[in-house]
Length: 480
Image (cartoon, rainbow, N blue to C red; front, side, top):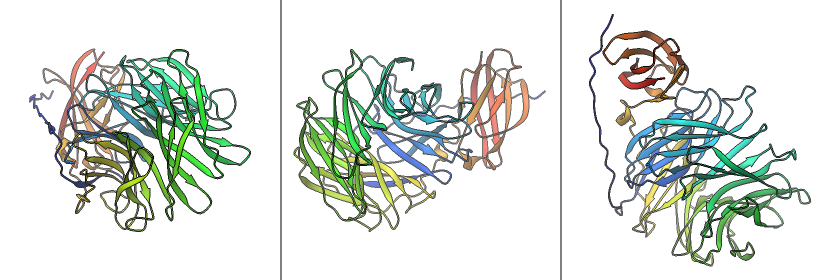
């Protein structure tokens, strides 16, 4: 009978209390493919980055949650999901400083249908609970917004509306992730919603696109949803000649809406900005006629000026580059810059600093450490271009932190840890009581696979994990 000496360590990480004017570019990644569609500034003035990775022992994708300080220094990362495809699209911070991540999965249904998937963590990114949200058909979540009642409003698209086509899908959740109501939003054809916000009048506005059967093209689409009667107040469709999309929207100080996206014909893509009135009518449209392929995927408002992030093949290195642009409240170009290397960079999410700087995230194939890595740029209010790229940011800061979920657990638990710390995704698990008595020995498991604990009595246990590439790691597990 082996006994284990227990040592408790405490690490305190402090982020900057104020934002400086430093500029920087960092890349991050595990495995071969990493995506980062969403970045937020946290309550403690760090950055939380949400996305998807293949680097945690799953040949397909997992939800990925990473925290850095405002200088881009890695603090911790977590992965969540099952054995198949789990794609995260958006994240919000909760009032207790934890996080809610949303996306979709086909890991948990018997026939691998797609469902909306939400994961709730504590402030350290450790798993609290997860839920499948959806219908009997395919469902996808693209966006989430925290509400004043500590609940959430989510948007995406669902095939479970009875029409046989995808409809826009809006769902209100309470703070525990329980569905309170849902609304299917029909356009002229197949419809997808990509972003949702809470309006100053208490309703919700969402945008995306809908398929137009007459022109056989996708059309940018927006709608307002009543928070009281759960129905559409108005809908707007941009009936241009060619394909066009909305990807993000924000509310102006006068309750009008700023929307951003792209407009394309067979050979080129142009970025667009649109202003709608508070009742959903078109005030103005700006199409920015650049050469090649271009799009805006996110926007932010600063004193009603519009800041856009996306990509451009017209500016910078010649392939896709991050494109960060500021326009006035009428959509007129004021200033801009680009970031990128010899291959492709695409910007997906943008946040503003209180001191007027900007931070943006997306993907790069120009710089390591992975085939496709997470790419984060920070610039000042003058759009100063950073010099140099910090590549392969060291994630061993977190080598003593792992994710065990669900925790508390009943019959089984899973372990999530960086793939580079274990040999071929396999490691050994030993379980001890808090008095040091070993109750399970030498269990060989794959990263993300289940460990059976159905034979253990209820209580608190210490899980010890070891692999050929890592030093020994430990975490507490509650069995109930």
